[in-house]
Image (cartoon, rainbow, N blue to C red; front, side, top):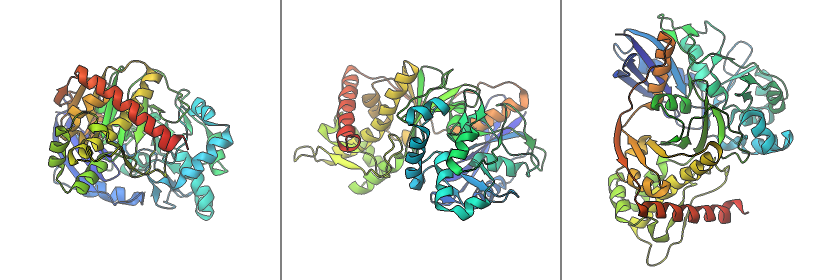
Length: 466
């Protein structure tokens, strides 16, 4: 029985799953926490991996592994390959002004979208590279190379026995890689940094790039969203909506998107295709905050939300508690709108919080649909999807059939799937565990249209119209 391992090095923790290469069945797993914050030493990721991997017998018999890592984070290295400073993570917004400057300097959002499929926002690596050059010139002067979190961890796993590598999926999130031509845009690196930087080689999707100290084959790895898409086996005409710390919505296409507003990032996937994606900063933590506001448990929050009618009797929750990435509103704040003496009830506030978080992703799915064609089904995954209220309410926000996965480490499993591909030469087809399905009624479809109209008007009036 061949075994493979997938490593999900996320914002909050590292998770390792060991799977049967033929079936995808998880036979062992372990995890360890990452430090909190938006600025973290990459060395902490390695320490956390070592802690998780030390679980007795965890990697026994494993023949190949791969890393799915949080996208966009900037790992800066000197000429000797040593860390220059702590990594800036995707959710660090200090580079928002630098994204604005880069857009202007290249000639506008459409020029960026045409060049690399995405428009710089604070999360993108290119914006962080500019921030480093502007805000910390002494550290920038020491920096000769930049890589992404999964690239760095892969390099450590191989005991630095090979030149740093990445894959086209994660590279496409830097905003200086053209995934259509499969080449770096060094002119954009120079625009951002003022000089060129060394960047990792882009490996083929199923390549074995090296081996661990114990002889385990290492596949290229990829970004977390690309690994999730691989783990979930997403098809064209479907969209995945993931509700975790952040929210994402993505689909799979044969051609790259070039959407100029920055709502859709024209990413590559982990197989050679493309993964147009919408990402929001505000996911499950909004629901936790709402439960705390109401003084109830998350289970009671679900009960309250399900007792309120679709549309929450006109109460709207703008979920920008931590600013927002899509649309790019880093300084925005959340709002409760439309309160009256009649509708200011705990159940309406509870439901509005869930509707608001889901709407921000439904807004993105609508733009995905405009860019990629019809989307007929939503696969809902991530920690918050396990709430009893989220699936049914999603039907009345998206107006589409909703399939909710079971609790499923899609990123780690996707990385393991890539490792199996590299080991055997064939991309396996592993089943995805499904928990429930929700078919929208006519009432749900009407509610979805009304919710979208109301929230879109609030977005325009309260944020984009200023």
